Picture 1 (tube, rainbow, N blue to C red):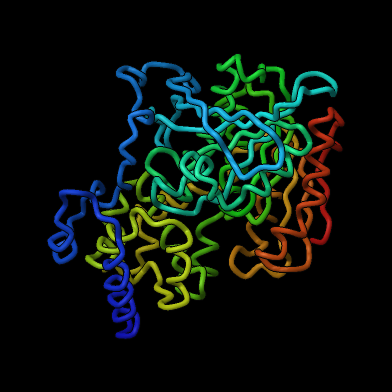
Picture 2 (picture 1 turned 90 degrees about the vertical axis):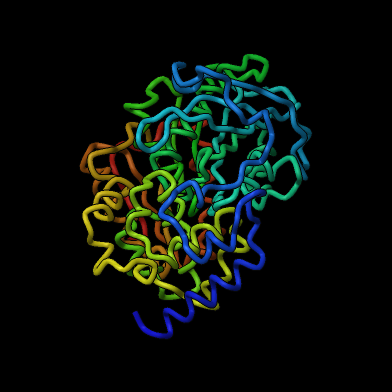
Amino acid sequence: MTLFTRSAGTLLALTLIVTAPWTAGADPVTDFITPAQDPALAAATPLGEPWFDPPDGYESLPPGSVLNTRSVQVGPLLTPTTSTQILYRSTDSKNRPVAAATTVIVPNSPWTGHGTRPVVAYNMAIDSLGNTCAPSWTLPRGIAPEIVAVQLFLAKNYAVVVTDHQGPRQAYAAGRMAGHAVLDALRAMVGVPQLGLPAESPIAITGYSGGAIASGWAAQLAPTYAPEVNLVGTAFGGAPIDYRILLGSMNGRNASSTLFLSAAMGVAREYPEMFQLMNANGLRLAQIAKDMCVYLLAPGGLVAPIPTQALSDIPDVDRSPIAESIIADTRMGGDLAPTTPVFIYQGQQEFWIPRQGAETLYDEWCAHGADVRLEEYLGEHVIVAVSGLPASHDWIDDRLAGVPAPDGCSSFGR
């Protein structure tokens, strides 16, 4: 570790501690000076809302069981809607029961098309560590950053389900937790009859970047975890597929480096054995950033692009047995593949999330017999977030209308 890296890490930590929202009753000075390898110290501060507390014995209920509901007002929206939040039983990355939350937004206009009203499970790129960053908190307060994307689907008279896919620990970038949360939200939706969204409602899943993690994992877990969910297709773009690739493109290299660090902290909440790998500075940063949203986390990469290796004293820490195991467990693809159609879009000039990940995923899923369309466009991450929307929305519209996707795999721009 260079003197610059060590100094930059300390400077960033000292800068963040001034504004960090510490838990009442904690001793932040002691925790900062002599940090302990205790995952609880880096856990997101609870909101203090009893509605999010699951009832005793919920663990014995099947995934997707409804635990609580409440009506909320979501906005700003152009389409008149009725919104309901559901607390439900889900499963974390290690197959343990947890309670998760979702927001179901239904247009007030009746569905006049064929069959029952279609549903879009829209997964926002939460990319944050705090509970006040989750859609269940931001949507009712009118500050959800992707509300325009939600409105685009509501304008088509689709229902939209926006899930807190990072789970109750706000486990940013933990794909298994995210996939489970999305699928169980759709199970819970069916379990609330007053929503008017029965089991036969056609469902499409979509999201970009951080939202693509949840979308891709939901698609490949659905066949074994939730085969009864009426999923007709999944479209996603800019997906972080393999954190081994991102170690070379984001880790300590550019403005995205603090997002990569934040993702590491989020994954550690599902895999607490990662705290064994952290040195004092790593533990300090985990405590300081524990409640921060993306708008506070992202700018740090411009000031001090710190590599994850600087937060550990273990040589080649990313090749340690713990790291290797977690990187493998959070990698999309491998032995898992969807059985419903998928549309993937990707930037050809991506430097944060290189196209290699999307192309490898495409090859693996196709080898498993999945029906996949891969389209690569000119541009990098931010540009393709916009330029990829027309084709992905058209693809979703066709699937929800009952138009079959072409069999097999095809690509454009590869």
